[in-house]
Image 1 (cartoon, rainbow, N blue to C red):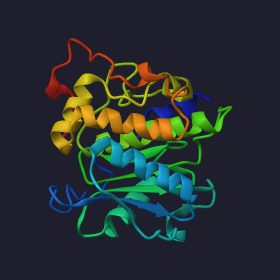
Image 2 (image 1 turned 180 degrees about the vertical axis):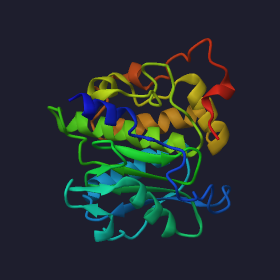
Image 3 (image 1 turned 30 degrees about the vertical axis):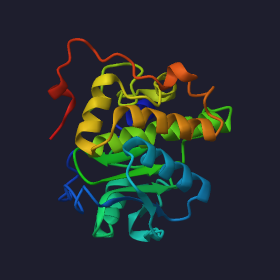
Image 4 (image 1 turned 90 degrees about the horizontal axis):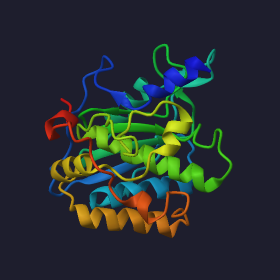
Length: 248
């Protein structure tokens, strides 16, 4: 159990996995963000992730053709796929006009000595890969699973813009330790993280909040997400400078 918790702590933050990251893709003013299924992924999960990404940045999102899972990235002894390999695979096949690529897989993933990962994102960089395999673990409702998924998408997308883990316990960029910590965070970014994401991603804060609320409400997740209070940005830690939240 301790090993699993330790694996979860590092689920989303990749600065250098030994492969050269693509720092950016197409021109940010016109380029799309692509959501890319890796292997067989339920259409509902792909559509939901696309809606969350679009809401977070107010930028057009396109769903790319699925990438087939590669046997070379599978570790039979573990029954898992290598997350770093999937991330490089995603980057190597990114549409040339993409601004960001967010890969979604239904397979279990890991890296190094970690038991498992929920996701891995370049910080900063142009890509992230997210696994839905464990979204429903220790979970008594489909609504909670989707709220967790939304938090993960927002968190990983934030990393691609250089947002580092936040000390605000309710911020979606919180460095989560286990499912309990994840469930205590919200889908909202704290004031400082949201400000940095909007500045770096070219989004409008008020529109972003309204769009995220619309996605959450449309899927019947408002109560599970903490109601309207759960969608409001929590106050940022007073002793944290804006620059301290940006990596790279």
